[in-house]
Length: 376
Length: 264
Image (cartoon, rainbow over all chains, first blue to last red; front, side):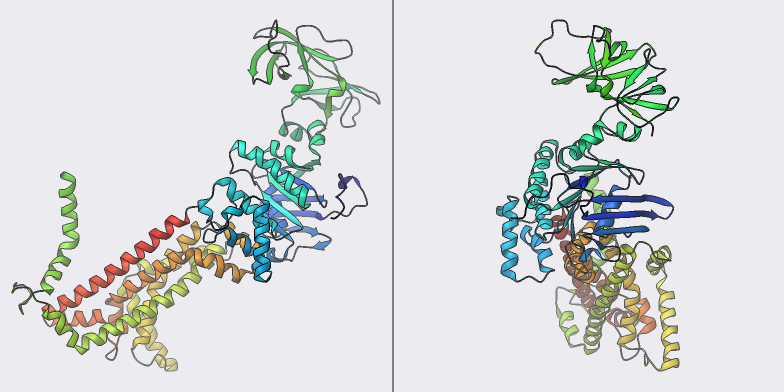
């Protein structure tokens, strides 16, 4: 048993990354799909590329697999330049969105296909196929054809077909997009468990931020061919580096404003949409007079009829809409400036004696540490 | 009721001539249009007509050879057109491969004849009109049909299947043999059968490129008819209809069967 991989390898400046993108660009004619991407992914990571469709995440993955050649830049796997190496000689395997199971072969035939290419002796192939089928709990289905399987079963076979090759990196292209919601959530955890057990590095492409947050060690948020931010799910959610990331990941209230006071531990900004100046303890370095965006997550605000305690940021408004989801409620509060703000509150008690309702006058309060100043 | 009378009318229009021909192939009389009772004597007589038998055998050989050749070449063309997305002149080639479908046969036949004569002058091959020239000519026009059939099948096929095979370590030739070929095989069979039927009933192009030593069956029928139709021709034509019908039925079965197992 190898010693477990360090929990946060990317924080070690001396660690050699397993995968390195160096200034990688990809152009299709005039269209720039990927623009000068630098990225390091470490051994044992579960790395997700997250972005809307057409943001270049799949192109990046396909370049790693060898199906596309970078227009510029280099890709290294384990220190070896992959640029001139064809897909069939790369130490990576890809799980396709459509699963791409060979319809004319049985489940066992599909899984054995990759091993046959390595000219392994037949008994060895049979043993490996059986072992991997048992691992994904598909042992009973070895002789079925792909069209006789359900979506979830096909997904397992596709995974097994990749894992049996014992690649250095497993690439997953929207691996769960074809499954229904319940199965998807269950499979998310299963995938993470399998990855934990076998220790192979996973690189996943997804447009589903919940999926990326649940499964990944780190996430690279992409937009228009550029990686906007790389970080752990917590970093990306709590400390987004740009307006785009703040808006793309989760819900965010954003107020445009100008910095009026700049002190070491906090800044003060004036926002035209708010009556009171805001005090913020986190964010990009700024100077007085800089135009900034102040971001506050809906769940970081408190809503009540009473004025919040001294030292908190606050605003006043009336409830315009309530979305009751059972566990939580989202309140849409209309401020005097006409601006709507989202506030999320957990419904802690069965019933509230005086529940907040439409048209109620309310105060919103949030701590300076729960807001963020963004300049990009 | 209305529906059935309409159907009957349309199908009578399509099949009445053939039915009449088949019925009269069992006519005992020497006259084509006068019914003289049921008999299979014309089928017997056919078996002793060496000229017809030779022609039938030649037609069969030509059809098999040209169908096979055009399937191989047409599949290669289809793979090049579908799988290699960006090469100079792809649009031009796509258009050009289908042009022979609408080219008048007289022109194709004449052009081929001129080419063969010119080649014979230049380097002495092909010597005269023979089975070789017929095979080449039939391959030329069947090729387009095969390409069209195989191309549409390839275009429908999920390209990620081939990528997956390559990803799992198979080199391009191996990918083609183990993944692409088995999956497009129904189209290849359909294309082969189509090319076979096109070849076995071709008159116009054969008329240009066949010679005294090598006369395919349709040409023999055609020349016999010119001397006056006799019931033996009806018998011969009935056999041809039966053969073509069987071939098309097999092609239909193959296409349908594969269609069902392909749904994934």
